[in-house]
Image (tube, rainbow, N blue to C red):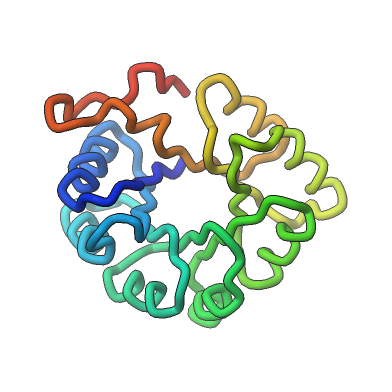
Length: 187
């Protein structure tokens, strides 16, 4: 499971990230929608030994470079951006670009995705993974968006490699409740 950190405020994003790490989740995606995302990645890497910290919502090669300079372990994009995929493929860095159809899944894989992000997952049936993997079993797929305790088993039963979870996991974290993940978040 990769916990997706998506908000604008740097301080809130850091508090959410620390809560998630303290809860035992060891893979985070800090999206570039967070103001100062590279700095947050850098701080989390320095403060959290053994935690995998990646950059999400990477839309340009400049953002990709900033993510690497900050120490990101991987990158994720909400769509297929050929030059970003090529940038990471050339450097041997894990990359996951999003897709929503079988053609997009194949194009994402061809343009550098190690694991294709299936997005937005809340608008898809988990059976899409099984259907796509039937002719393309060599492509690993990670649904993101809409994954929760009600459907996680179905995603994995249909062949998900991993899952990305954001708002479902973090919706109850606030300044007064810094140590509480969504109490309904039962995986």
